[in-house]
Image 1 (cartoon, rainbow, N blue to C red):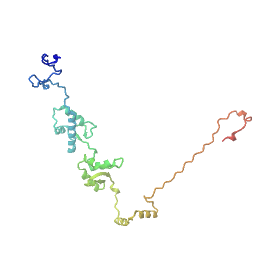
Image 2 (cartoon, rainbow, N blue to C red):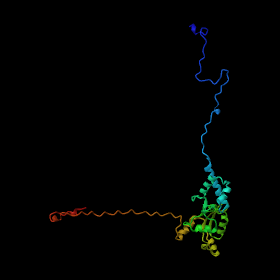
Image 3 (cartoon, rainbow, N blue to C red):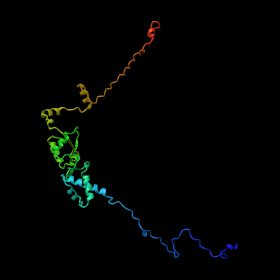
Image 4 (cartoon, rainbow, N blue to C red):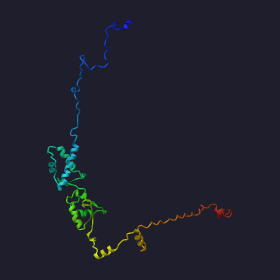
Length: 266
């Protein structure tokens, strides 16, 4: 077994590594080709990716401007306020299309070159408020917050109308401001004589609820706290079926011969 000894064997060859080494023979790490030096592929990108958002942002600014001015404005006034240059033709045409859209909920176009703010309720004066409430099919209350959306001095006008008894108004508990309004007819408001008011307040209600109930019963009145009487419904009577009559009689020529058994029918 002498051939296994290192002295008898020849020089040992180094087996190459299956993966290339990043280290050079000098021991320093060999750098790979830098990826930054590779040519970068540039893909085409859509132009003006934020155009849609930009347009609707401009529309919101225009709506707020119309609401603050509370007057009709031209397209030129709006574009100057929005700082849109004359050479921005695409943006101007898109804004013009949005402004003139009949379905636009906040901008009203007069058909020419005037644009105004369209509030939730087209009410801008006391007379318009009265007409709006009178023309309602149902006696619904109108929110004062919605009225202020297009009517800047709505609170002052509502307060004056309430004093003239033209409106019924509910107020907020915190600050006492008007909250909801209904139409009111001043001709239906009548004053009660002071003598009658005094006689009315002289009537004292019993402190005990049972005493009040007993007095109502003694006066022949039915108190609201009385138990509800349940009337038992009678069962419906079943109708008796009429006896079934026979069909068309035949063999009439043999009546003298055949026997009559009709009396045995049940």
